[in-house]
Length: 288
Image 1: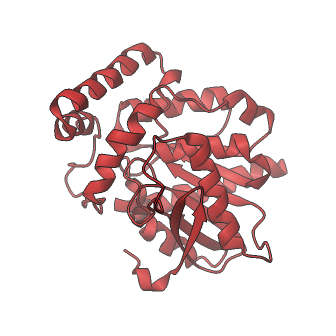
Image 2: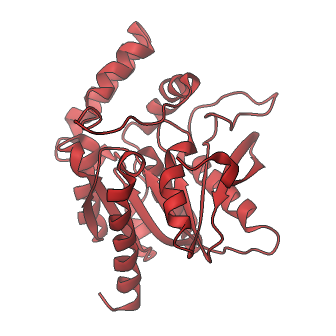
C-alpha cells in the first residue's frame, strides 16, 4: 500500500461537504479512481502507486461524501445518496486537482461497484470532461435477465436491515461477494465501521434499480470499457457487466481478482487496465 505521505492531499468543499482527495504522480493524464459502497479511496493506493511509476499519469482518488474523512460540515447533516450529486462531487475533485490553471480539462475515470454507477452518471452529465471511462463491476441490476429477482432480493435486504439490523443485512449481502476467501487472496483494507452504517442507511435504498441514461451516454460517443473480475464468477454485479457491454457496444474484459481485485491482486490487474486504455485509445483513433 502506498504510504499516504507520498501523496498530495487536499480538501474541496462542495454542497455542504468537505471532500478529502489525494493524488500521486505528475503525468499529463489524470486518472480519477471512484470508490464504491465502502466509500474510501485507500483501496486504490496500490494501483495508483503502480501507475504513477509509469510517468504518464497523475492518479487521484477521494473519500466519497459521508464516507471516511469526507463528512458534512455543520449544520449540514447526512442525507440520502444522490447519484447526480456524486457526479458533481467528482467534478469538484477534478477541478480542485486541476487548479486555477485548469491543468486537466478531461480525466480517465475508473469507477468500481457503485463507483462505476456514479462514473456512468458523470459521463451522462459531464461528457466533455471524460477522456475514457472504465467501469469495474457496476451492479446495474436492471439490465439483467433476472432483474426482477435481484430487485426483490434487494427489497428483502432493506426489510432485513430495518427489522434485524445492519449486521444481518450485510452478512447476507456479503455472501454474494465471491472470491474474497479464495486461497492466497490477501485481505482488503477495511473501511471505517461508520462507512458500512452510512451505506445501509443512506446509500443502498437509493441504488435499487438506479440506471444512468445509457442511451444518452452512447449518443454522446463517450469512450467506455467495462470489466468483471474472474473470481466473482456469476455474481449479479459481474453478470451486469456483460449486459452493459451489449447495450453500450463497448470493449469488455475479464480481469484478475474479485470485486476489489485492483487492490488485492494489483500486479495481475494492472496489465488489463493498461490494455484497456490501449484498446480505448485505438478505438478513438480508428486503429482498432
